[in-house]
Length: 77
Image: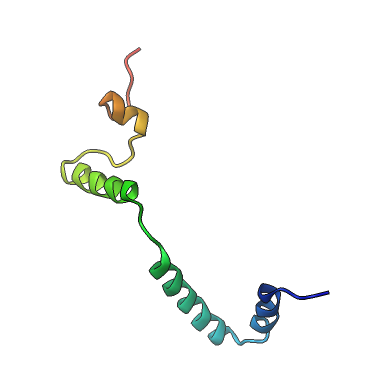
């Protein structure tokens, strides 16, 4: 039975010291961060949240509440 690359890597990683594992973790974190691509929608949401926070608005507003034009925190009974 053939062993996958991931299984081979797991076997090798188990042989490393804690310091070496931390180095691998840091490298993986950097690698994954560099590979992430932001969608236009995500970038828009970040810009909108920045504007809202600068205006003193809550950053925790659901899309439905945003469509209604309210904060989503309070509702009339």
